[in-house]
Length: 359
Image (cartoon, rainbow, N blue to C red):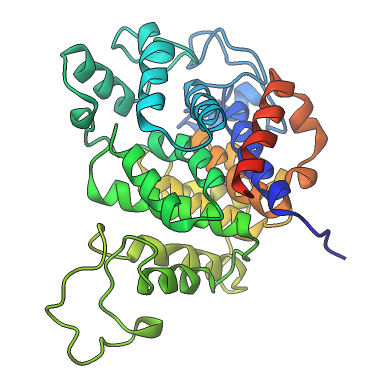
């Protein structure tokens, strides 16, 4: 019998799952040569590892967080201490706790590597631009990684979830497609925390919220992607994002994950199917696939994400959030929690944020 979970358990599972995925990637991050990955870490990575000398994140230890994890933690602290998403507070923390430690180069600051979107925002702040003008066109998942905390906080309020994720994303990324995919993924995390299943019907639930005006996407079709009703052409667009396609991806991927005629074996090769690079359009579908295929098996999901190489850290971080939201904190194997650096503080933050999510 499947264990019954509370919203708080699923909320904590999503956040801690993301931290675990980030930490799992500290050692084997960004190996695009899979033979080199296997030589350095063996045929199967099964836990936290130290980075190799001269590789990314050198100086960190197994179980530590990268800079993406550092920013997610910073975001979580802001949400917990302010009781809501406070953009002014988050920006002040980003400036004082992160930007003060950067020098504009990739290999600087906490976690040993600074993403392109953060470097661009840092440079614009150094040039005196206001936060309203710091967003750039990097297509990585950096804003999505930190947005997991917002998705947890507002899981019970999807309209506020989407609005706050969109506002926060624009601080570093303003490309419409990147923003739409970031917002859509965050909405999926929220649905899973609410208790919805990650199956072929999940996009229908998301689209119903578009039709009711809850989610800021424009859709002209009628139910089940049928032709628009007469008289709808020319009406004002009901939403910020021009297309709802980012909301449709989860169902298509979830359907493929359980279709006996479509098999990716072993599952880590999803990285080869969707692509190993850092762009959000490579990472998000792979995370959806692993989260739908291993919806009740956190360990298999995150380890297949890591063993696929390339941008495996973000792949595991997003997969960890999705599967953590499905199995709950109690469904995450204890060894992954025990191995996290500063686990007690992270667990306390997760508990505090989950309490706000259910209020």
